[in-house]
Image (cartoon, rainbow, N blue to C red; front, top):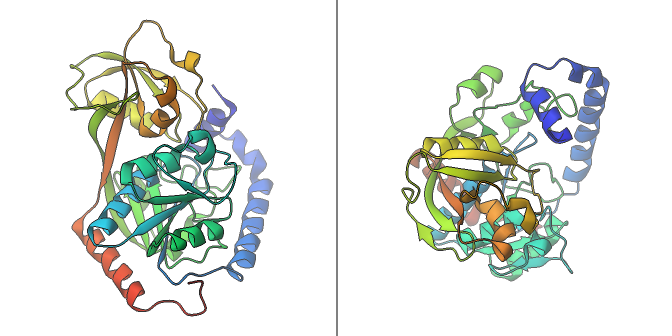
Length: 343
C-alpha cells in the first residue's frame, strides 16, 4: 500500500488520526482563499467563451469522460473547441505544446494525449494556462475548455462545471490534509453546474443546502481496443468469467475494477499511482492472463504493448436537459463577447 492510498483510505473511511492535522487544514483553507482572491483580481479574459471542468477533491471523479463529451457535443453543434491542460506527468521541450495523436506521452502527459486521440480536437499543454489558451485562439478555436482548471484562477472563466464522484462524494468533508478537498464544499455554490458521476444520494446528504443545479452523469463502457494498434472489439470480446490482469494508474481505480466485474470478468487487481510512468517489465504477470487497462494507461503502454493487452473505452451520458442548458449558455456568451479581453 502506497502512502497516497493510506491517506485516501483515511479520507474516505472513518480514520480519526487525520484530525491531528486540523490546524494545517485551517491554514490550507486560509491560504487557498487568499490565493484565489489575489489571482482573480488579475485574471486574464479572452474574447471567446472559456469553460472550466474540474473538481474540488483530490483523485479521480470522471471529469475526463465529461470533457470529451463536451468537446464532441460542441463540435456537433458547429463550434471549434480547444482544450487547455497542465499536462501533469509530462515535460515538453518547449511550451506551449500543441498535442497530436502521435505526440510522445512523456512530453504532454497521459490525459491530454487521451483527450486528443478521443476527440481529434486541438489540445494545448502548458504550465501557463493563459499562454495555452492564447495558442488555441491562434489555431482558430472559438471555445476554450480548461481541463482540471477549477483552482487555476489566473485564467478567467465564463462557465464552471464541477464533477463529483457520487460513490465517494466529499469523503470526511475536510480540506487537505485532513480530508480530500482542495476547496470547501461551499465552493460548489459558485459554479454553474455540479455533475455527479453516479447516484446523487450521497452528495445530497453531505451537501443538503447546495443551490447549484445538479445533473447526473453515467460513464459506461463502449468497446475494447488493442493497446498496440487500436484494433477495436465488442464488449463481448472476453467470455464471461475470463480471468484478466487489471491495471489502473488513475485517481480512482476501484471504479474501473467495478466496471470489469460488471462486464463479467474476473480481474486480478494491479493498482499503480495516478499518472504512473509504466516500464515494460512491470506488466508481465503470471499466470499469463490478458492485461486490461484504461485509455489513460494505454497511451503510456502502447510503445511496448503485447498483443493480448486491451484498453476499455468509455463514454459519458447526460440528460438532454443538461445539454440544452449548456449549449444555450454557450450561444448567449458567443453573442455577447467580453470587452477588454485578449482576441
